[in-house]
Amino acid sequence: MIIRDLKVTVSNRTILQDFNLIVNDIDVIMGPNGSGKSTLSRVIAGDSGYEVLGSIEIDGQNILQYDVDERVNRFGIFLSFQLPPYLEGITLKQLLKRIFYKRRGYDERDLTKIREFNQELKRWMDILGLSNEFLDREVNKDLSGGEKKKSETLQLLMFKPRYIILDEIDSGLDVDSLKRITDAINIYYSENKPKILLITHYNRILRYIKPTAVHIMKSGKIVRSGGVELIDFVESHGYDPF
Image (tube, rainbow, N blue to C red):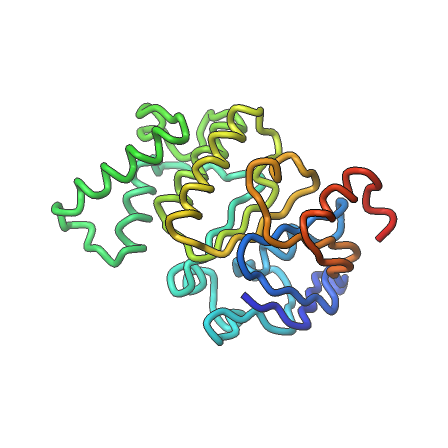
């Protein structure tokens, strides 16, 4: 994913300006509140509430010309929300089955794929530590913060994305839930080699998911890129020096 000269405005307010980034492998964006990190994730995913100039290229195509559904289905982009939404009237199992069949191009009436679906579902649920009772609940209804993040991670895994955007996925997670979720993502990464853009304030999640590049974002642009040494620098000095 190559982001070139991105400018993002909303209500005549510029949020991102001269933003450039290449996501090669596991890239981390760190930065203070209000630097535009979450706006970036929503723009990549196709949120129509912004005016956007520049380009975001995947497979040589500027995905800004495509709507949300096309970005999901054509390019395999999955955005993990800071606050996963409640979906009324849809159970988690119904959603997962729809995700699984559509992503793989299967006909939902094809009963021969049920075994494959169930095997993959059980595997990831065991890794995440989710019980079967979650499958019959409406999506994210009456779930704790950690349970919502596990549910969303399960959706990610069953979707089988090529590009994963994790927007502060560690927010509100206890250590055990964070370990379960990052274990699952690391297994998926080792098997499928997706591109990952991980957005975070803190370095806690980076103890479990090891980045290949680290980028510091302030005032709507990348101000420094480097290796994991930037994580230690931020931990010691904060973002003021940038």
